Length: 339
Image (cartoon, rainbow, N blue to C red; front, side, top):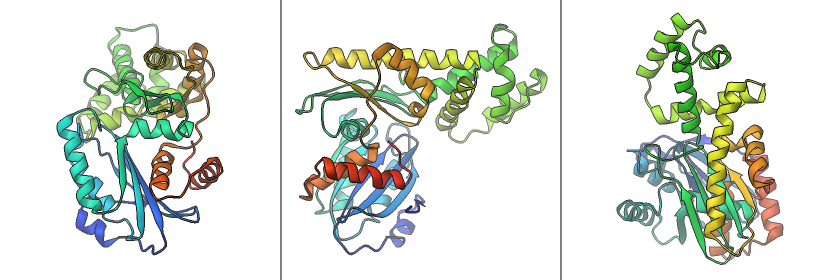
């Protein structure tokens, strides 16, 4: 397994860590709201480098440009093409221009493709064939493609008035439920108090939990990411039979189901299967709850970063057929990137 190298945000320090690769290679970047991943792939199909840094969504990450350009400056001189999927791309003309400037200035004459991170994940999941990809990570969005260049998106409005069914919303709803229980406003779901507070590292006694929760809240450095991280506790509790946690995930499933159905309506005449991406949808409970309303999902062919590598391979003239995709899936899986 290729070791993942954490990347610091200081561009000059990152440039000094540039990974020495001399053979022809391609690269892909999956830039999300909470983290950004770089994978460099040699022409023989082996991974040359993996790096990770913080989120690069320009809507809520002040350091997005430094993180993105910092990663790009570490690319080998032998890089033939780069495929990038960036959160927020396509959602604001001003920010799109800034993202494009950051990429073009960093890559110089290296060919690249730039799209939204969910578009890239959709391409990865279906290998470029038609389908609806629903992504739930820190945020949420659905992306549908007919495989012929037509596509549409649903959701992705951000945490202020969107991101339904996302890890952030699940975490926020869990905190709301916890506070209602602590206040005595909710006496129906007290079974949620002990396991969830303990999962957060808080005391389960209401008198002690209240000040501890406020202390937790007051010391948050990155509130959105911290709240989104709570979704994994909700998922674990739901899997273990905690009914209030299951209710929270059922509500998230209903929201994500609405995304899929809306995307299918926007692409009439095409019977689109659905697939999934994002940390939240690694939950079997959540996927099964959506499947009960939308039918069984198609397992993604590649994890999201694979979509960027597939696009870069085409640009580099590597002819990424299904055999190449299958091999890449095994390579990425061995490196810890399950689809």
